[in-house]
Amino acid sequence: MNIQVRGDHMEITPALHEYAQKKIGRLSKYFDAPPEREVSVTMSVERGIHRVEVMIQVHGVLFRAEEKSGDMYASIDVVLDKLEQQIHKHKAKLNQRFREKGVRTRIGSSEDQGAFQLASTAAYEDEPDLLDDLVRIKRFPMKPMDVREALMQMDLLGHDFYVFTNAETDEVNVVYRRKDGTYGLIEPNE
Image 1 (cartoon, rainbow, N blue to C red):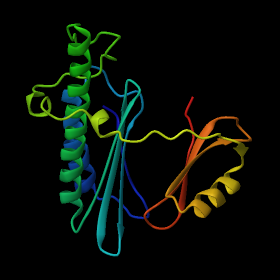
Image 2 (cartoon, one colour):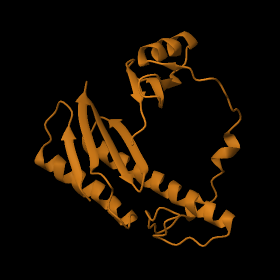
Image 3 (cartoon, helix red, strand yellow):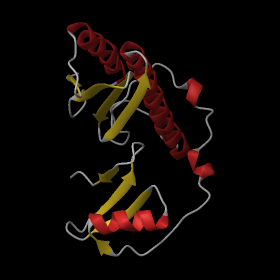
Image 4 (cartoon, rainbow, N blue to C red):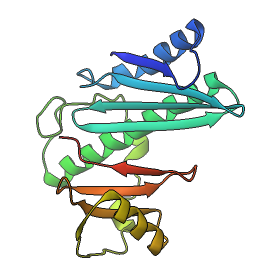
């Protein structure tokens, strides 16, 4: 697994780099194929808070986790736990989908994306289906607009995100308000 460790406005010590490589490298046991892209590990420190963000994309599925704490090593440990939980949940959902269809799950088949080999999913098989919590569906016309207009619409509505058709690209985009008060834009990746 190709792991890229970088510091966001900070220098990564060799010990910290090695620790992150070793810990995140453990995730390779869950995959039968390497991630399509390098695994991104980004670390930063702001006002004494140590933040770690990890992103892994395997067979089109993006796993992302972030943790903040008073210690960078502790943040790495918690991020690893979060990623393992996400992988287990994803595998359990795949297994449930195959059980419902009456198809035997086979690691490496094209239908299940061939991405995961997990030791045990028993702890996650009893989780309720997330669709049971879906209580409302909204439909609305999506008039093409630019990003600036979408941000204004989001603010006018008092929402934290806004889905719109980008007039420049003719693709569905999402603008959202970040925790620090700035804004983000989500675009499809081709």
